[in-house]
Image (cartoon, rainbow, N blue to C red):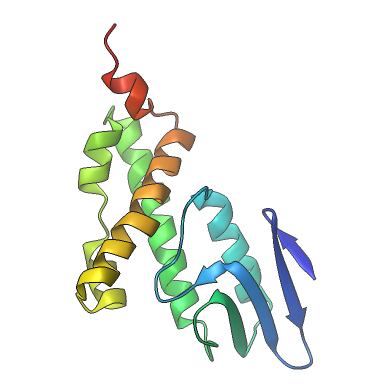
Length: 147
């Protein structure tokens, strides 16, 4: 067993199995309360174990690392694009409008209505909010409150 950023990962090396818990959820990852930078590192730790099978917290058994790498890439983009936007002075509202990962959304959802909603609401928006906060951006409440 390994602890990655507060998550517990179970590794059975002889069987080539890693049980990821909610670090990996399919068909749409959940980013509520997430830390995108740490999440990227945790996913890298799983890749380093060279599993043949992933048992996600929700969803089907995964026989390769394709989905994990897709999620990792999305998190890395959220972290980097949000950090750049905050450095440029963008508000949370502006970042939420700009960082959409629409190309990734279409790959994961096939443009299915409810999966699109889940992708935006359960993954992108919470991850962008947290990345914005971690990059030192003003919260939406502070940014919109009267002075």
